[in-house]
Image 1: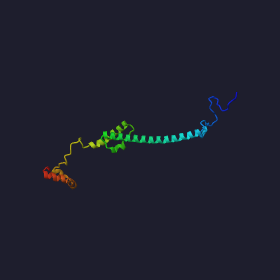
Image 2 (image 1 turned 90 degrees about the vertical axis):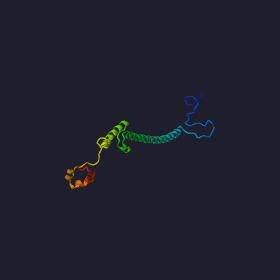
Image 3 (image 1 turned 180 degrees about the vertical axis):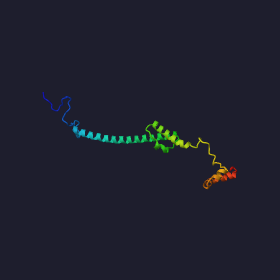
Image 4 (image 1 turned 45 degrees about the vertical axis):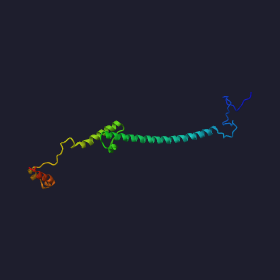
Length: 160
């Protein structure tokens, strides 16, 4: 029995010479396994780089979308509290609940200042009515400062 050195141990009839054989009879370029591995590794590296670039672009766009949605949420919360949009940068919080709580605090401060003199106090009817004794007790500077009211009261006959 002769031993065939071209057969591998598996006995499947394939050659294990490290190079591909030209079985079709064409003039094709033959590569070693190391050359194929190098080519495949280079191609994989290019694809990984391309994928990494696309992933970075995707991540950047996702971050922009999240920022826009967060700003929109801030404006929605401000509108619900009847606060101007310009205060969006003043809101603190990372969740909708935190933003709403901060907006509530801000609204209580802003609305507290708004409500002074509005619907809480009697309407201002204008100037105070002076008496003759009050006018006589005024300093010259006070008389000058209140001259319009004093003259009006003299015309109306309400200076008593």
